[in-house]
Image (tube, rainbow, N blue to C red; front, side, top):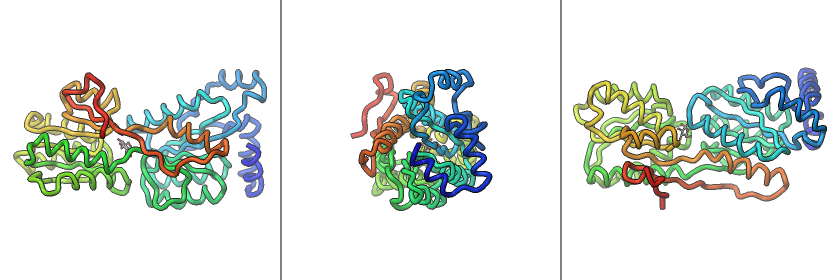
Length: 341
Ligand code: FRU
């Protein structure tokens, strides 16, 4: 906090001063909910209890968490994982902001965290290019940054945490080649192609099917969103009278495609493969027979908090922390899936 105060004091506008005064009076708690943010997850009773316990119960470090879109189950899980990990450390306070899938709003959130002088920033950016500069500016202001799940461009951040999306895409491609006996007509529903997981899940998949008789007859960017995937799949169904398999870059996309196929009475004609494998989403779809396979994409929330603590304590952390993945199919889902080699 001491470093934070010095940094903030040197560059404040009048409005900034007033905000800061209110924040500090509340024990470094922002006055009112953060703009565009979800509630900070703290009740009045919690605050009273903390105040009664005296200054020692106050957090030593404030972490700003910039989430690109909380309107997706996987991101709700990421925030929950971050919150659960942070709750084990009373010296940490995490302030969450949700950009609601709006890149400009997310840029603004990062700028707000920088001018408030948080001790560390965690960001899961919507898109790589537009968030690169704001992240670099946070670094220039002396705020360490953990980039989580989707990348920014270049290397001006402290640490990137995420699974290897190219490897997951390749594993999906290999599974698909096997499942179709090396030949078939496939629809690829891509994640937002201005985000790195979309690019990598696409590239890895194409690598794995190269030289086989798997033909991608339709591809579209469904921007990670189930309703978009459903709409794109309706077009694919209207154009092609036979489809062997749908590869969607996430489980909401695969489910959207399945809904479209079911509405057309064609869901039994084809297989569905997704990525994420949340227990209550993709894994449940596999158990219900909706998806044939899903690949786990861990949120990295707990690892982000562990790494943040290490950075805040002055330890050196690796530039890249790569998380593992698991494959869930109808055959292995009851045994908890199998790890990717
Ligand atoms: C949620 C999500 C996940 C996906 C991840 C990729 O926004 O689309 O479904 O695995 O982002 O960054």
